[in-house]
Image (cartoon, rainbow, N blue to C red; front, side, top):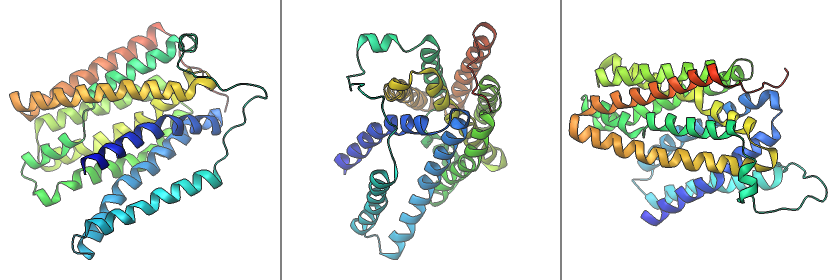
Length: 297
């Protein structure tokens, strides 16, 4: 089971960067926000429909784990069929050789704007630790164990409903404005969850957590695509995902330490402080840097 879980995570790590690079290459530049928003929305729909289907099959088949895992193979196989038969990779310029992109001269071509997005994504991830802490917060607040998955269902529902329209909005408005708005929403979510772990306050905090993800996750991917050279987008997304993944490990470890030492409120207060730091960085960059260009509509 541990090996299967490890392979699942390795597979996710391998497919993430080329998938996002493919979306960036295939989507018109003035619709990249909408494209990444749609991808996030569909990905999130699958993330909460899959567990619900698994729960239903477990009840129907008397906890037959093997049968449920065999059913889970079907969507993965269909993805391969769609990828092979329905997706055409963008054409490369004639005569352009394929080379290893992880070379010093190629890394030098990644602009300061790109590295700023990477740093921002890492700080952002420090503020957004594992969603498992949302479940733990509601469970600590008295929610029955059988109902705790509803926390992730609510968060995913808000995320999936908001990702596409907010992605379209990002194509038409300032990245700084939308990103700052998402951070303000995250600060509000952290504040509510630090305050209470039950009742309307806690559920509103969960919903705001999903809203901030809808406002920011597709936008960050769009910013990576906009600041990286077209022939290095896969590398750029890989570096961004690596930095964000390391930050998530640190954030979750720190969140767990704070939870054990000072309680749940300390965890969410720390998340709010990191969110405030990221917000300060966004606003400072808006004053001192240059805005990312928007393709003509």
